[in-house]
Length: 161
Length: 146
Image 1: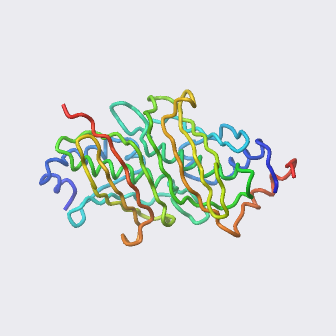
Image 2 (image 1 turned 90 degrees about the vertical axis):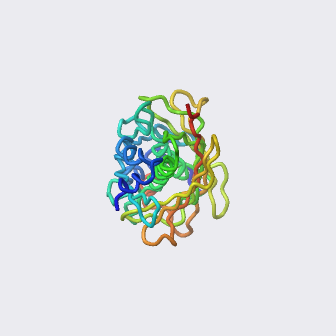
Image 3 (image 1 turned 180 degrees about the vertical axis):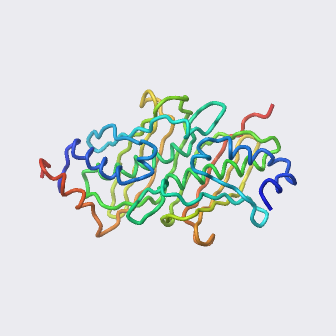
């Protein structure tokens, strides 16, 4: 099992993100990888407003950010080789409303792996992680026989065995 | 028959069409609505900008979820006596099969509407309604009336 450094994981996530047209369109960026935890950012955009009176972001934009963050955090997990992992389900609790004009961050990690399923959780927040505006949990399926070796190949330099 | 025609017979749903055009994110996704068999049918037109997986290609799962959440909210608004924008409490989404690059549909059911909380289920499909791409359930908080 190869464990990638945080920098290698950032590059891997960026490569995968760049291949996702919708993510690129929304300007979702990789903020950091800290061990197995991935943090992405969704810049505030007027096009993504859900409540035109209040100017607050649409819950659906948060769904996109959290789906993306939780899904991509699977490649930051050191406990299995990154593979194709389609989403099985996703649940989002909307704990608060993001104030208008603020970028939204989302952090996620795989908290449990089994042979077939990854259990992933994450939060979305603006100013402080201690004040989440949403919490998400979901399951991702590990598809046997397909891995991201191609993406991985360019990232092996300096990896710790 | 257009949705606007139907809304004339359904005073509680008068603001639905208006909301579709007033919500920037719904405009961004180009969400449309029409009537089919007496029910509101929500439509997410095919667009390459919605692709999440270019190798299939498939729509971004989050976008499908966002479309379904918006459909659920609009469906609820249409059923309200005094339409207001409901606040989403939680959203639970099951992905059943990847959504391909084509038009996507959603229909909703107001499972229960209490004084404060509404439970809405949403089904999204592409080819056949019997083969949904995703199903979802949302709880909405209804703002105090008056």
